[in-house]
Image 1 (tube, rainbow, N blue to C red):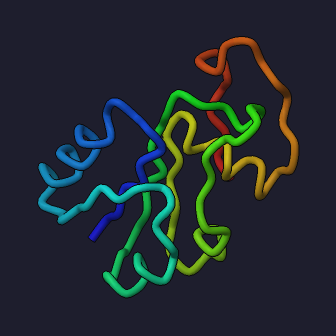
Image 2: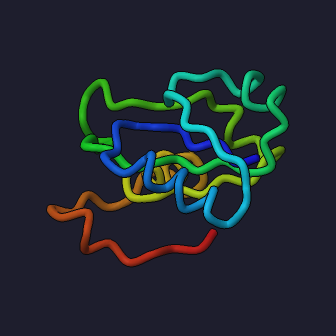
Length: 106
């Protein structure tokens, strides 16, 4: 099972559908969902969806820090990559257009 944590993305359901098309069960849950709930569901992977926010904005959405414990693999898409970078790399350069950021493999 793959869990998609929704940070307000317009395509969270599309991501879930693409996962299901690969014959893998998936669920979309709000980004406020605690890690233990996801762990109890038996998730084998987590996708952090995109969203309209930036981690540089005050009150930017986040998720339970336990998602970055390494117990379950995590993939960030668009905004979902920003909390991962902040956790593992620290601060990263602020750019005017996040679409211009090159992918980074951690």
